[in-house]
Image 1 (spheres, one colour):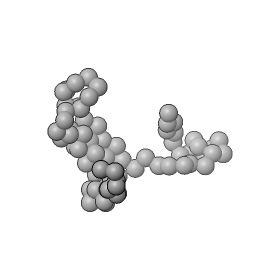
Image 2: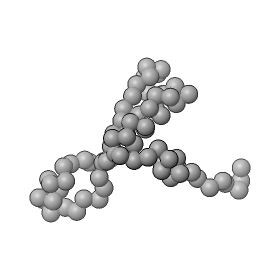
Image 3: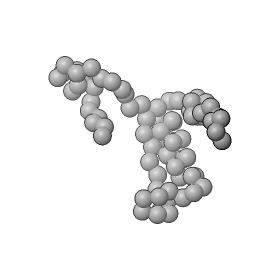
Image 4: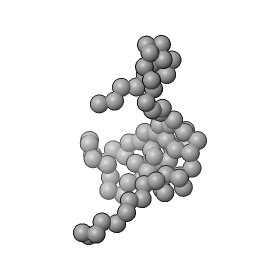
Length: 73
């Protein structure tokens, strides 16, 4: 579960903000009620929009999503 509140509300109640939401993006491909289409185009569009509203470069995102290869595969 995640609770999101305005920073000034957190500070007013003496809480230390742990994270900030910099951007958001949503999409719907109407493929399935709970499963996205396998091509990932709409999910990719939502991620791209979130990056744009956060003022971040998609290049940074692709670099941060890399995972090292697993030796068992």
